[in-house]
Figure 1 (spheres, rainbow, N blue to C red):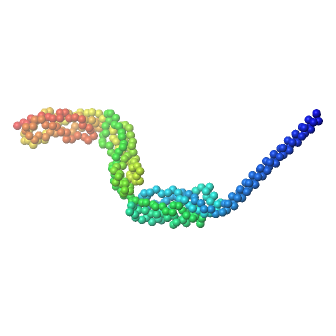
Figure 2 (cartoon, one colour; figure 1 turned 180 degrees about the vertical axis):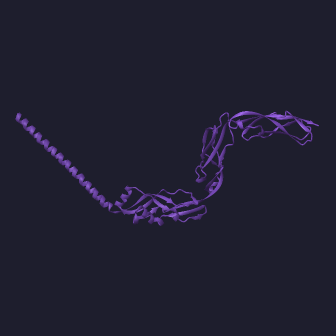
Figure 3 (cartoon, rainbow, N blue to C red; figure 1 turned 90 degrees about the vertical axis):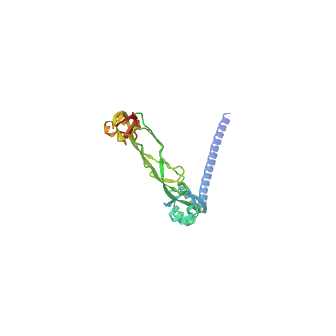
Length: 334
């Protein structure tokens, strides 16, 4: 029994070794197969890529030197499709290398002609084939460019003056007032646009802006808004706004009433003075003098008894509130 067990163990040992050897041979065979397959694939690719192929490659394009006197009405393509015939290796190189440069078309070399609807010029790719081939380094391998023609539609610019509409808001706090009217300069802009759209633009708006509370002298430049969906230019492109806000107080002053009469008789006035109530800024309070004011009545007929008082002179930096009394009585002395 002992001898049989020993023989069985030795047999299993040799079987295991043979099994592992066979697996190693199989792995080696698989490895050799894939190496040969890969080498064959590379050889096949090199053979195939040595042939000439025709393909289409998209290339970015930019039109330069467009007419300065006219504006372009239509959108131009951003890419051109180049039909190229070359060896597979060169085509593959272009496919994966990317494009460091774009095709540049000089629009000044294309004649502009007058049409029923304006002006236009036509880009014919066949006339630019050599230049495009030079820029893309395709040389003699460029067969065609698509689209074969591109129309550039132009329209002349015209100008007109357009008023400015303010969208500016602000607040003057209590006990403050505008010492002078808000000033916006300029009040109009020069608008440059196509003839077909310029008549539809009636005004140019400022930027919508809230300036908050104004308590002193305020000056700021505000941008103007271009009309939406319209190709145009404005000059200038901003306005300047000046706001003068000052703290005010109330003041009263009594001034004598002057009489202007067409009558020969002497006229007495009751009362002989009026009280003028007005608002004045703290800055100008000390500058108020009585001789800056002048009140007058005009007498034309003897029958008149009560005549309104008119304030004919007063400083332009005050804001009148009241005149008391507003009418006075007169007496004619024979």
